[in-house]
Length: 487
Image 1: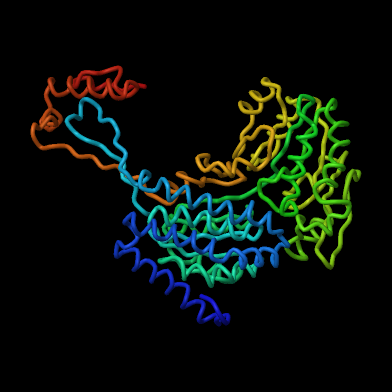
Image 2 (image 1 turned 90 degrees about the vertical axis):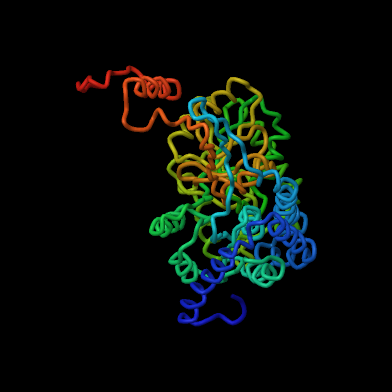
């Protein structure tokens, strides 16, 4: 659905018709064979390699992303996901054999993966290529048809994908638009909905999906903390922290949202960060080709308001016409400040002091479960405490964000930061149904002892079998004549 924007009446017609058409295609079985799936993945790869310059320009137009960052965080990430799926797809598709209990033998049991059907992928604006195409890799690898809804807030990338995806893939439709088009899409019946964005819209998506009992994956966000103590290598920590926070001008769901630092590490960190920012982006980051801009005026105004509380260690400069906010570090921020109560999603880094790892854990656990938790420490006891006593979508030691680059690690949130996961094999499983298939020969008929009429012999056999398979359910045993009840 590209070109001149259709009228409301046309939208009401075209969106249902698109879903119906894709379902008819899926129902033919054309998407199920490995050959079709591999062809789609190779098509995505060709799209990325044949139109690299156009993609770079779209990302620059939308977010002022530099060429290197576009390859590192967008194009390269999707290529890696595609190549991983191409390499392992046939292995993923093989039925998985599982053991059968002795009392049910002879029999064979396997898990077959099958595609879900027609899937809806609703993408965000901050990584408009990666967060649109990476879920699509999983949907196509699993043999599904898909409707893709890019973000209207990244219009250049949205238009590019709308023009290219139908040329390089089959059984994929792109719907451009804003709230109205998304609402119309959510009124249709899908077999899976994959949404990346904020929790407010995530709740709307979940509510809409519930009407058709549609399974959902919600990739949300939240406030991802970084804990730093005196055992950290502070020069490396400052570089990695600044890279993770200020990439894409901080508009990253897994960027470190705030820092909890121990008193003995505080001065070293505060001394290192301003110089590190200058090394990365120069004395005036506004002139750096490696530093982006805020997506739109509304987000710029919101972020500008978050800098009102706390003391300024670095940055604080902004330009409304360019939607530029310098890499900014705040210290001594009140816990009740707005910058500490909502996801920042911008280039502002508050630093708070905590007594030790125990106070850091209490601080983290008093808030919603984060999408990611970063710990810069070589203290094994601190690492164990963070792993055992906190809950987060992911836990990474000594670096932010890099867990996204490991295809065999599932990526997703927990609680307020999301539900479900993807990347690599997990993406394939997310867009598949794992169907159990059991086969038992009719001869010999080893089930004859469970048929009615039951005797004391059949009861003894069943009780023994149940006790062996399910000990908690099988004991204590009572005689068939025992009519008493009890706990």
